[in-house]
Length: 560
Image (cartoon, rainbow, N blue to C red; front, side, top):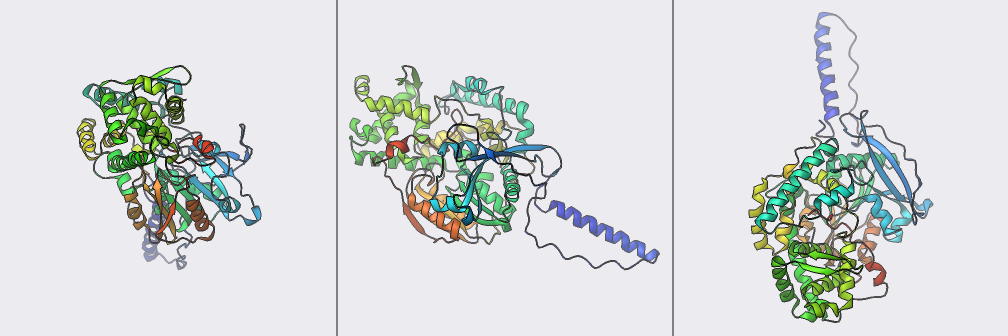
């Protein structure tokens, strides 16, 4: 199957060479006209060679989507057979606000793996970047193959069946009984995914998503790609650059995952991507800033030293889960692994830290004290709903597909407990939680032969912009410079703050992104601050607090 961009060209060249040899042999036996001079090799930059779809943009269905256009196109399922079976790709766009100043299209990936581009764009509700970007670009989000509306990988007959099957699964196992259940559940889930979506999984690699994006670039009429990728989107960006180095106009890569670590290395993908250590460092900042903010701004500080309170809470939850009353009158049980997963997800945005503190305070406080804190009760329910833990379940198959076919998974299921124990020593609570990410891939037998796993030294001469946040729980800041070093000309921007990526929390970063995308100018070594500090209330923060936590792990799956 297709392993490099040039395989078809190589086959054509080889066939032509073989034909020339045959002709040379024939000419010795019989006179023939001289062969024509060889043609000059094409200097056209490499791109996907497949039928380019026509995009028929239409108004999107749904309330509040008037600003958007929607469409779907068909792309080759297997780029070795570009005229064969097809896969549906769903797209949405915010048209440029000043068509006469339009530069082209900006393709955006919000992260994942398994993160939908269409729903995320619609959830944001309208322009979400600097106005200069929206003036100059049609901003396009798309659901990667296997995700959302793009022929999603499904593992059960419907979402309700999947939700019911995983309802009692802990966020990660903490004892022998839970470990056995955890492994058996994901073994059964992998078998179900293979049964219902095996044909989709085996073509779901990030490399094929990159090929899809190149075909979409051609479909919108752009000679070069302008791209903005968050989190896992930086893996997609690195893959596109490796496959199509001369087709990049601009690439903003925010919240970087080292592609070498993503595609190979020691341990599970969740362990080797460093999320446990990064989350621990960010959580320590959360606790320190909570203590400094005091009880009025951080409810957890009202119970004592936040670090001590949380450690006591985690110890207690290991022995006895807490029964929590929710605003609608129902209750839910919160155990140790649930609390750790909730904390990890909430660290993604500093705007959620006050709610996280209130939720932990409610869990930690004696019953009479917990009920006396009205904000605590409301915050826990609101937080859990925003995290998706008590809402409609999102399918896990979409996240498993590309994660499992993109790289090496060197462990056996029975290796995970020892890895988790070692990770917990290195990064308490979060190390064990994140080290279980990848177990699902040990049971997935499908591989995508078109996956790209390196080399990652980039050949593009385009200037790219690489962004890292100092305390990022999901994509460690320590990956930022090594990621940039893969490129010949990368300009690094550091956001001195907290949380996962810059989306919606740093106007300084937004302005720098706009300058780069429009003018292709960026300073290496630049820094930005965030607009709102943790535990700080500013005008308009109530509206911001209603925004979902983008790209937090899929509920029920310890995803990346």
